[in-house]
Image 1 (spheres, rainbow over the protein chains, first blue to last red):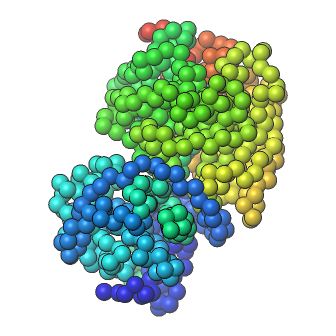
Image 2 (image 1 turned 30 degrees about the vertical axis):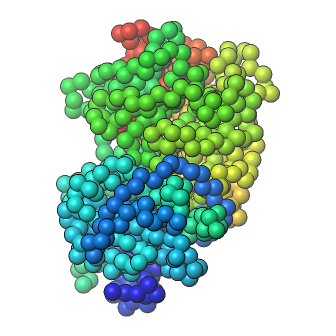
Length: 233
Length: 400
């Protein structure tokens, strides 16, 4: 299992060929994969998207985010890949970043999980790993068995004590999805349509930000988590 | 391996071609339609102002035997709301319908049965909750709705932006110095622009009584995450609908000035501030009412409320836009909606009860040719002046 300090490819949404290091053939595949990921993201995209100029690097990140209390985070308990129950309420006192994915997802899920990995690295470097927990929940428990989810996690540097990958019996997962308004709609091609929001929950258990998977930027999430850490210091 | 790369490239090209066809003029957080529309939701009010406002459900599925017919009306159970604009939540599961006059919000479930929307919540006490009134456009951000509100709680003075959860629980409000009309967000840059118009008591009064001092001429630039205004762009009166170019990382967009008979361009500089310049005149007496865009960033569509025409502008050269085509005789043309493929444009012709000058209310359709030329479809007409339960004013549309 890769350790937390392991190198992760630096794929970014719609930044082509950004990875470094791999041989030329693998680079070509990574470029093709990143194109594929960009093309599949659920956004109002156009053909010009893949040719669009890169965004100015720092404009997308606000240094002074406003994080109003949106609502109480519904409590739940799901099992990690080792079968241990993880109650959300047991994580009070730490910020929680909660995402919903499925491992058969061809596009956005691996991209956002990779960004969670980059965020995890940033949190480690900033000394914030003790005050933050990342949770990645599978919306597809039938296909995502514990070993499948474990293998998926390992591709991105997880699971770790502060980055848990969760699944459970379908009925239990369904109840969690309902309270987070995370409906799922299986598609004929095996994909699952779902809102794919990412929730930032503060140490008191209030939702303070909701990110779109399509536009998730780990740099902004880091700034937001740091702001919560200061607020609850 | 080489064959694999070629195959992957072909798949990518097909995918890229596919994503050209996506519905426009929605929040970027909403997944736009990628196929033909089946149903239209049209926010409608009785012309005499006495009956309940309602959501008209219309069959727009071409092969359907009831194509072009009203399927049902979903009444909201209260009168005098002044049905105006709507917005999907980020997951397209709900529609928020705002009422200009009573400031109520009506939330419809359109996910359980898209052909039969169901009113699931009415929020009556919006001014008390938010300190704001005169809601114009509900706009989706992840898990929440931002609503541009024209004025203070009494219907006068400056307004702001109100933030709610998708379910209708109030989160926060942000007051500003003008009268917000519409919101557009470019997530890549963390920038939000809000256009502006007038206070609620002004726009609900006859046009002849409007005090020029109550009319805004500014567009505000926000740091979206900070919910903070960082720049004010001054133009001509009533800078209404605004559209950001669809290309990711596009730094420009346009909006219309109804009072200036003009189209304005906003462009972000490398430091994140904006330039704001007049891009074209729509012709004296047009009074632009709505602005829409084609999925390929090639055309803008402008409706002229007073000029009774719809204009297509070629924006291939963003800095030098030119009038491409017009359809005339569209009395009081106002709200528009372009389909996912850019080939059809629905439009209605009621603005506000205080402004309408013709009772010939209708929903019509314009076919858009491959050359971008506009042609009124004579076969698609829903005449709301002869609606079964009495004349009604049709305004904003959403497709599903």
